[in-house]
Amino acid sequence: MMQPQQRFDTVLIANRGEIALRVVRACREMGLKAVVVCSEADRDSAYARSADQSICIGPSTVSKSYLNQNAILLAARLTGAGAVHPGYGFLSENTRFSAAVEGAGLTFIGPDADAIATMGDKIAAKSAMVAAGVPCVPGPDTELPSEPSAIWAIAAEIGYPVIVKAAGGGGGRGMRVVLDEADLLEAVSLTREEARKAFGTPALYMEKFLQHPRHIEIQVLCDTHGNAVWLGHRDCSMQRRHQKVVEEAPAPGISDTLIGPVGAACVKACQQIGYRGVGTFEFLYEDGAFYFIEMNTRLQVEHPVTEETSGVDIVQQQLRVAQGEVLSMAQGDVTCNGHAIECRINAEDPATFMPSAGLITALELPVGEGIRVDTHVEAGYKVSPYYDSLIAKLIVHGRDRADAMQRTRAALASFKLEGIATNLPLLRELFDDGAFAKGETDIHYLEKWLKTRVAA
Ligand code: ADP
Image 1: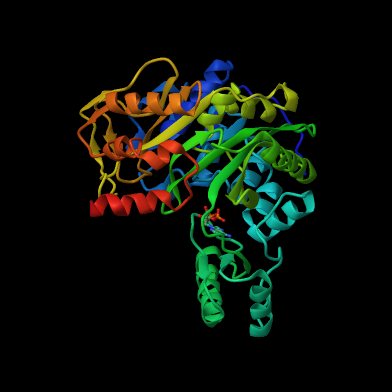
Image 2: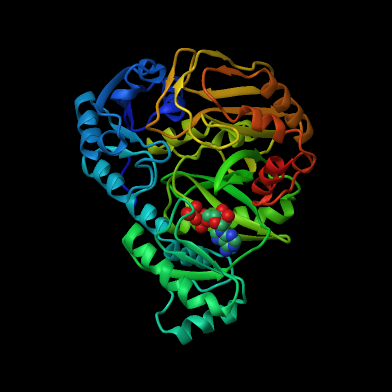
């Protein structure tokens, strides 16, 4: 159900790092006050200093700070915040947190608990998408039965290879690919056991396993008055272990005629479920067809590439619709300009991918037309071992893809970060790869490229 919206002048940011800083900036630009919560490890960080107020809510361990719902709610009460922005990760897709924030009389900057719950259950999400006419991966939008004969029959109907997935799965876990009938029952029982332990529900479903898809996603923005738009598409196929490394907008080689109806179906789905705020529909794309896999009910790491191409400040829009404002744009106002690429710069060893904590001794960021760096780090900043290794996002906008790629190469070359290991050398090499430069590589490309690189 939609909650009545109330206006607020202070936003509490229940997150850290670059995204906390990003939200502080949006608040500033809109004349709102920003409060950040931080752990002891983050107390002296630039983003904690940049806010109007920062409150230390606990020790470095995330369960005692950034995931501590009571401490966050208490901080909101103490600072007079009227709204809570959850960022991404941490509590951003937590039904209980969204409900607790609203229960405390505050605005949760994101969808309501019901929408988070529906989209968090992959079977419920799939069935809502089927109902709205969003194309899904072949396979039933119902829970897998337990009788072996029924399980075999479903797989035979879909056709091998199939993938068995946990309804409550996330973060690339709780999935098993099955190549033929002989392995099916064992895969089902292993995944069921894993799901019961990891996600608290043994519910599974089955779908066709696509073998060489690309990852393409659609950004949506909805107000609380039934208006919704989609802001174009992104390609996030450059992944390692289901983690995105490079993202771009628009997805190369996808025509408006092909993706237009998919975007329109996403908007319709949002209206049907009474969705509010920003969200992302993730699709696998293979042989000219789109297949919905999941919806993320929050702001995403890669939102800047859409901001650069659409000219829409997604975080400001998030704050506006949370204030109850009517969307200021209609679908016809949304256009895509040029091409944008984001590189995730991680504090990790470029060969072993082991996280690297420690002191950043020198930092020189690339500058120039079309270059944006979203980061919370600076020279003298100590990268903590407690958190995600993402330390900066390099976002480059060019007139077309070739221009954006060339500008990215130049920006990566002049990006100087010393003291700790980062994936910058790997990104520099990747941008010299011919197949990536051509575009339209699938979700397995990066891992294959990494193997040949080690072998070379
Ligand atoms: P999670 O919520 O764990 O991220 P997703 O459903 O988004 O799970 O799937 C994560 C990744 O698993 C996808 O990006 C894709 O690489 C792979 N995957 C999921 N479903 C399929 C499928 N039907 N066919 C091929 N790959 C799939």
